[in-house]
Image (cartoon, rainbow, N blue to C red; front, side, top):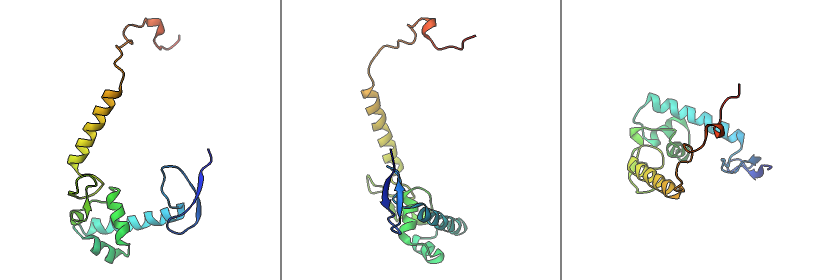
Length: 137
């Protein structure tokens, strides 16, 4: 299947979009990565800095810094009051969900998976040895 052509959401250039991928071209993605490294170094050297302070010092847009936080690429105590859990609204340090919601979602996923599995008896033990996979001599 051929990739779909789309315009970059940042610069407008045409690029080959892969389903489930980012909506930016490789050039803009590389520029974002460079900005991320600048922000990362600043946060490492100035722990507890606020988003505004990081944006002011690095020249990186506050919204892009928030995107790095939501993606879980950054984590700092100074950012706690900025990012909220998308499920319950609790303030979190990074990512999309708080630890409690992640645990609840994990439990729910496991429950759905276990109820959707067919209840077949384990036929593996009942098969003869010649039906099992082995290395031929």
